[in-house]
Image 1 (cartoon, rainbow, N blue to C red):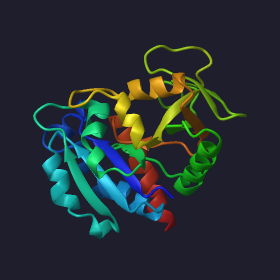
Image 2: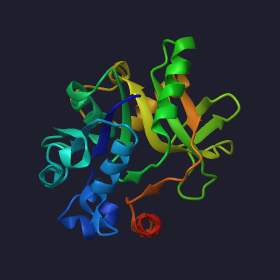
Image 3: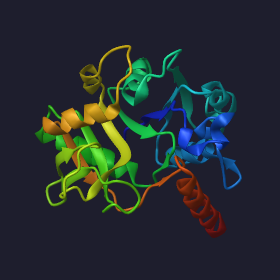
Amino acid sequence: MIENVAILAGGLATRLRPITEKIPKALVVVSGRPFIAWQLELLARQGVRRVVLCLGYLGEQVEALVGDGRQFGLEVAYSYDGPQLLGTGGALVRAAPWLDDQFWVLYGDSYLNFDYRAVAAEFEAQREGHPDLLGLMTVFRNQERWDSSNVWFEAKTGHLLEYNKFQKRPEMEYIDYGAAILQKAALTYLPQNQPSDLATLYNSLVAQTRMVGYEVQQRFYEVGSHSGLAEMEQFLSNLKSKI
């Protein structure tokens, strides 16, 4: 099991204004609690033990709430962008000292309830036959339902044929689900100490066949937009009623 997770939570969250004018997206209240609390508790249940929170905009508020992570059954460290927002790629490079040789990458606005252990085991199995493999991307058959599909994925083989956020093609029925496993060596593909986009790294790894795909069946939930926040509220309210 891969027990180390980097959560990218440093963005400005402009789509959630005015809610995020004074608080970061991670602290947006959903079903009575800050979103980050739901996310961290889910990760602890899935076997994660150590989390690196990559923070930027109003990140100190997140650290004040989460602390060392013990209240969630986790060890939590913090990596800050600094004066300049580094983007998803740059933030991950900055967090490298706290990352294991293999680690999960998640986004700070996503609630992804799938079997993390099974996906990690699949990655290990794939690497036995492909030692140059640097990553695994979870994908979901989105078909333009919840966001713009951006992955051409061959379900029978697990092959990622193309990942592109900016140039669509008809074969793209899948979407980057929002959870990936990376080898730390993959970070050498990103520029050091400057802004960069994680999508650029994924695009490159897929093109070089150094990233495989894993289809997840459960839909994703997110709080990155007002509509997503409303869906998340309903989902968590239903979840609480079943407990």
